[in-house]
Length: 181
Image 1 (spheres, helix red, strand yellow):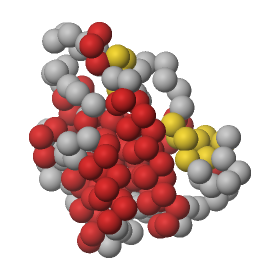
Image 2 (cartoon, rainbow, N blue to C red):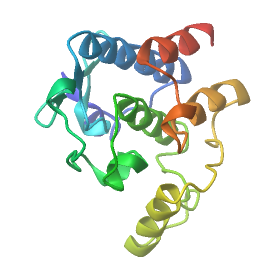
Image 3 (cartoon, rainbow, N blue to C red):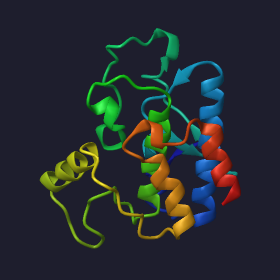
């Protein structure tokens, strides 16, 4: 297995491979949900690809059992991919993993850029990166990824909805959306 961050340094993913990544990670989240686990750190470095082109979810170091969680939930994960409710220290559920997966997909279909960052080839500063994250955390509407047609962009933007209730209800629903696409 090779982590996706490393893989992308030398390889590009086709749209078909990106959609398969979404489906494969949704299957992993369905398995996690069947035993009550939230991953809490979905990002490029925690997604792996094997020599057959299948994508796997790894690094469960900060994963949590749902029943172990309380109102005072910890703010764990990688800020760049963190759902707003986690960042704000609010109560959250398994839809935070769908949000993070949506951001991974967004980045893959937006020339490696997360929402609110300038398009390539423009450079950006650490301050601009911080401002982009703060805009996302404040609930500003995210523009569609540059390299996604409308139907594909709609799937990603639903996953990245600011309000958890506006996201896919569960990974099965998101998987179904990929399947329909």
